[in-house]
Length: 418
Image 1 (tube, one colour):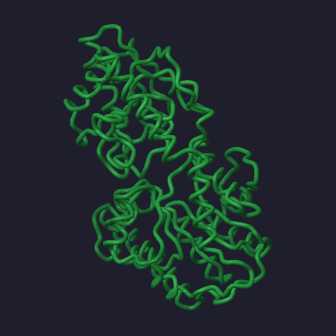
Image 2: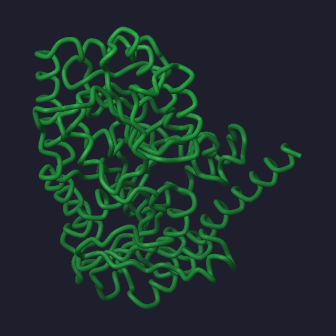
C-alpha cells in the first residue's frame, strides 16, 4: 500500500512539473512589457506571522506600487501589501493549492501584476510560473528552504505531497531543475543554495536575498533571564528534541540553568514528555506560539537551532540582532551568518556532545559571550537589516522589470545575461 501511494505521488509530481514545462513552452514571456501596473503578485503559505512580515516588508518598500499576496488567510497587515485570499468554499472544492492557483489567475486578470512570485517550488512557485507565462509576465522562484526543495525531487522537504514521494528520484530532480531554469529570477537565502543552482546549470539571475529584520524591534539588553532559547515550529525537521536533551544534560552540571521553547507544532506533547523523563521540566518553559519573538530573544544568552535542514533562518537572524549567541547546526545557509568562535558556533548536525560543549563555552565565560554577542549583532545589521534587504530587492527588481519603453528580453535573453 505504501509503495502504491509513493508511486502515485511520483506520477502526480511528475505530471505537475511536466505541465509547468509545457505551459512555458506554449506561452513564452512577451518581448515587450505591457503597460506597467506597479504590482507584484506573491503566492505562499505562511505558518509564522513574523516570517511573513520579514519577507513582505522589504518587497513592499522596494519601489513598486503594491504587493498582492495570494494566501490561505491574511497573516498580518503590512503597509503596501494587499491580500487576495480565496474563499473557503473554493478551498474545499479544489484544495488549498488549487484555490490559490485559480485566485492567482483572478489576480492576473484584475490587477495585471508585473511579476509573479512563489515561496517554495511546490506548489506556490510552480503556480506562479504558469500564471506568469499565461499573462506574459516575469516569474520569480523564492528557494525558501534551500536545495532540499529540489534534490531527489524534494522528497525530504516539508511539503506534504513531495514527502509522499518517499525516496530519492533522479527523474523528479531533473524535472524540478528544468522548471527552476524557466524562471526569470531565483532568490535564494545564502551562498550554498546559490552555488548549488549554478552547479546545476541555472544560468539566469540567482540572487542572495534573505528575509529582513528590523533592528528597532530587537534592541539587545543586559538582563537575560534565559540561558538558552529555541524558536521555531515544533516539527521533525527542526529537531527540537535535541534542544531538550542539551538543556537536560547542561542542567545536571548547572542546576540554575533556564531555557525556553517558543513555538508550537505536532511535537509539543512529545517534547513535554521528554523533558519530564529527563528531569528537565523545571528548567524548561514551553510558551507556545507567539505573535512575535521580540519579547524572548533579547532575554536569552544563547540561541540554539538543531535543524536537519534550513535555508537562512529568520529566527536565527532575529536572535543575532537581539544579541543572543547562536549555536546552530551547520546546514543550509546558516554559515553565511555564523562563524565559529567569531559570531557563534556551527555544530555538525546531530552531534549532541558538540552542542553541549559549544553552549557551555559560551555560558561559562561572560567576556567570551559579550564578544560573540556584539559580533552577532554587527553581522545581523550588515546582512539582514530591513534597510539592506530592501535595497537588494530594489536593485533586483530594477534589473528584472525594465522601464515602460524598454524591450523585455525573452527567457533565452535572461539565460545568457551574466
